[in-house]
Amino acid sequence: MNGSIGTRFVRFLGAFLLVAVAAGGLMLPGAVSAHGDPHPAHIHVGDCSAPADVVAPLTEVTYPGDAGSVALSDSSVELTLEAILAEPHSIVVHESADNISNYILCGDITGDPVDGSLSVALGELNGSGHAGVAVLTETDAGTDVSLLTVEDATASGMIHHEADVAHPSHIHDGSCDASAGVVFPLSDFTTAGGVESSATDIETTLADLTAAPHAIIAHASADDMGTYIICGDITGEAVDGALTVALGELNDSGHVGVAVLTESDAGVSVQAFLVPGAAGGMMMDDASPAADMDHDMMTADGEEVAAAIEGFAFAPGTIEIKVGTTVTWTNNDSAPHTVTANDRSFESGRLEQGQTFSFTFDTAGTFEYFCEYHPGMTATVVVTE
Image (cartoon, rainbow, N blue to C red; front, top):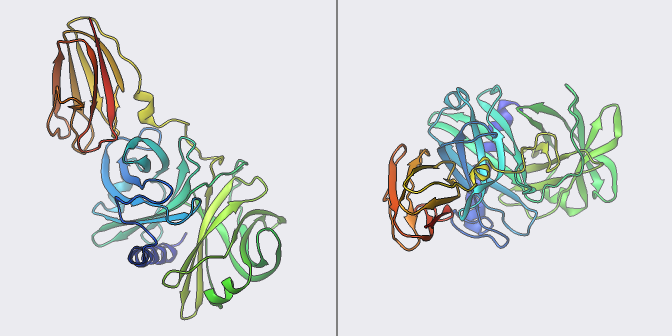
């Protein structure tokens, strides 16, 4: 993806979000959509195999309308793109504020920016069925981070990467169920930063494209034009001269994606992205790194036990100890947390990064606790005689 594509894409997202929120089409952070909670998103230190501290919060991902829709999130962070790329960082999207430790999307921020813009593929985690792309663009104040994700982005096939294989694409007459001739050629999908992208300006209007059935189709290669790998019907209502189209998998290609069609004085700008779908070749393990911490711990009477707060989770998730044992929690996250018993039998107060809290359990029982700043973070201490 070239720099002009990234810049235009980021500017479009900003304008689209402002108008959509004003119109009620997208919900503000903290709102709940008709088919699920908003998905918190952050830039973390570390790659997707082991994301650690949050270094920058991003605008929550919220799907408007019906299930299976496209979500847009636009943020500005003070970190420079150079600083982000200087060590491993990743973009993580979480299931919800109440289940912050379950990751549904992740993408490693790697690659070489082109004209100050970098695209990152966001791959599925934990069987979420989501897929997407992030575009990071340098600004005078830091970095603009735009996320475009697709819900229910399932794919049955696996992607078999071939070097420098471009996917021709077009706008066809007809729908994905019954496509006909090519109406407008689009630029080939080519790979940059783990994302395959295409950008084309065509001489038409969104009104003409939506007045009759049209579809965006990408082909396997110039040598295999008869095999379609994705398709998306150009339907729906444009918002402030822009329309998003989900691109679904065809022929077990493993690809899914999204296209953004923006009206201009010269016609329509078509910017499209392909990423691996839920069964695609870049998928992560089936468990969040935080989930691997959720194991039991047994101790003997009078011992001291160390516990961690990291990745927006308590680790271990369940601690089994004897009466008289002291548990010490250390906050390893950059964000503040608390260790607060549901019955208020112990309260840490605000713990900044590196700070600890200790409590000695002198009575038997089951003690559930949580973080007052992130109520979805919960854990349990089981104390026996």
